[in-house]
Image 1 (spheres, rainbow, N blue to C red):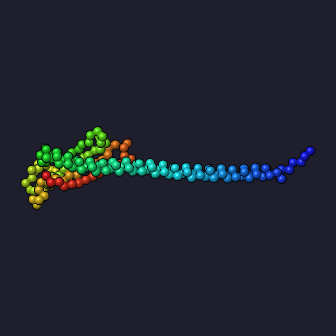
Image 2: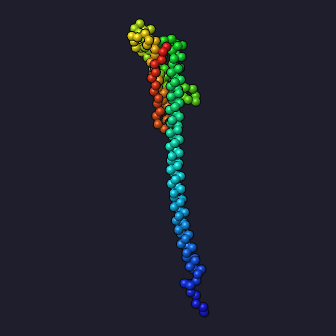
Image 3: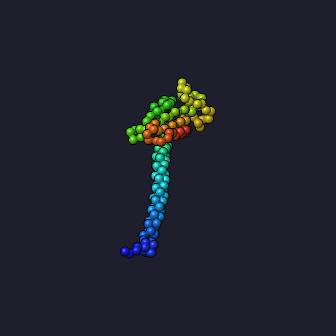
Length: 162
């Protein structure tokens, strides 16, 4: 019978070193996967936040442009209907922009003999340079909560010459 000595066998020593190396490689692979998963989760969170900010900024910039258009529209309506008519204009834009609500309040500025004497939405002034002006408050807001994540409202006050 032959005696087998595993201590002197070199293949046994190589086998044990390989198993300890593959264990460290497994721990390093798990660490790399955890680090990559953390980086991916942070990038996903930042992407969703950036999308929200971009949407809100787009809606706000569009509200600013709509307020400029609403001011021009109110001046057009005043010139068509005559002075001292339609002091509060409330309207919504057509179909692609129908989630906006636009409100315009008009105050007329005249000297003492005012054509709007029967109306309460006028102010008298003493200088002839200010005679025939209009003070407009334009408010644009988003009335749909599914589009914007937070309330969006833009207010603009202008003085226009009639």
